[in-house]
Image (cartoon, rainbow, N blue to C red; front, side, top):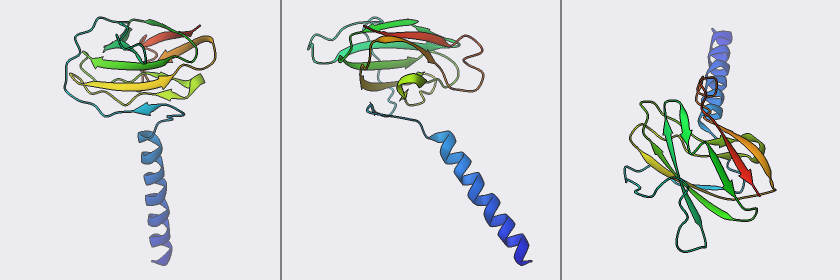
Length: 143
């Protein structure tokens, strides 16, 4: 009986660890905000008028990013406005820079801010299982 309890406790702790790891995301020096149902009216890859933060709308659909390519300057502050027009949840992730947006549910909008790092060309993907394989891949170019 004592052994059964230990096994159950160990399995419970491991299951909790797996669930927490699956729900977490690397944020690095970036900041995240939660999803909202507000609608963004700007066109894809639009620049904000303030000049301090460049705002870019990214439309998430099944299974692509629009725009597929995002170009920013090194050191530039960027705010992605992620609008999910798809039927399943999506995110935008750049592994090489440790950038991960919140998961955006269908019909929802979320924002994600980061400062563009070292110049280079980086692959962005949706990390939901199978989405990368279905073509949900893009490019972040930092000049």
